Image (cartoon, rainbow, N blue to C red; front, side, top):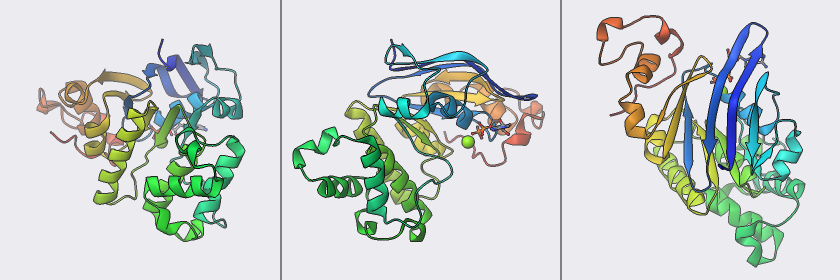
Amino acid sequence: MALLEVDDVIVRFGGVTAVNHASFTAEPGRITGLIGPNGAGKTTCFNVITGLQKPTSGRVRYRDRDVTGWPVHKRAGHGIGRTFQRLEAFGSLTVRDNVRVARDIHGGPLAWVRASGRSSLEIDVLLDRVGIAEYADERADSIPTGTARLLELARALACDPRLLLLDEPSSGLDETETDAFGALLRDLASEGVAILMVEHDMDLVMSVCEEIHVLDFGQIISSGTPAEIRDDSAVQRAYLGYSADDPHEAANGLGDHTSEMEAIPS
Ligand SMILES: Nc1ncnc2c1ncn2[C@@H]1O[C@H](COP(=O)(O)OP(=O)(O)O)[C@@H](O)[C@H]1O
Ligand SMILES: [Mg+2]
């Protein structure tokens, strides 16, 4: 059984079906991508997994248990960590203290720096790992957006997650930072973390994800390897408004909600 199983989840907000019969899994050691146009239901899926949103129907299973009814803090305590699309750090605290607070809420020391013994050292090791050590003493509201994204990641890692959900983690990162970020994700996965990532940077998604699910209007319209996703005409239609197979279908309406999406690189 997979570490995480999202099983036939539906979420309705009044008349809007934000998630429509979505099923997918996440596995230790694997980076799984969840992509799709704006409004497709990606963040809502994350909210269902972390407990912020109760599904209209369907189940969430984690480590062989049905956690659908579990509150957010209980899921977090069992190793479900996340970053938010909207940055959530405490602006008036320093970068280091933001990570310290996250770690203190979690409790125990981090498995991978437990040997170090000192908690402040542990936090600095973590800041160094995500590449923001030089900002440790800056207030979180004074750092660049890209750095704030990495701080979000450091805060999530401070809780020692087994399952890490990343909601558009690379927005605000420049190319060099994005490359370093991709390498860090691969490292984390190689240590056994299950990573589920919502991301608009298709180069990053295609280079780090082993498996990708494509959401469109709440439904998973395609699942597969990066190569399979790139070649899928249904995905091309959802992203571009037409597929290479039937270019005369251009502007069939599906393209209307793709304004922020980049073309899928080949
Ligand atoms: N709390 C909410 N109340 C009402 N509608 C919502 C709420 N959250 C999301 N939605 C709607 O659900 C759909 C999916 O949103 P979201 O999951 O944020 O999409 P994505 O993250 O893929 O851009 C959108 O139509 C959005 O407007
Ligand atoms: Mg979103």
